[in-house]
Image (cartoon, rainbow, N blue to C red):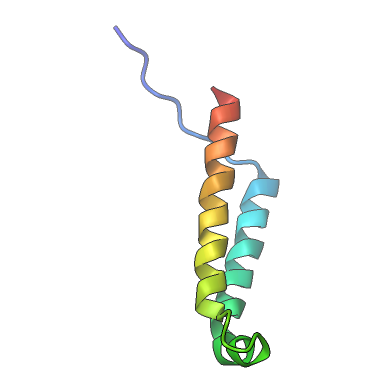
Length: 68
C-alpha cells in the first residue's frame, strides 16, 4: 500500500518572495509603454512580465529537483 503524498509546504520566505515577484511583474505590465519608449522598442513591460513568470517556473523546478 502506497503512502498518500504529503502536502508541499512553502516557507514564509518563499511565499513573500513570490508575492514580491508578482508585484514586480504587475508593475512591469503597468509600465509597458514607458519601458517600450525607454528601450527604443526592444523591450516591453509585457515581455518582462513573461520573463519573470518563466524565471519563477525555473526556480520552482530547481527547488523541487533539490528536494528529491
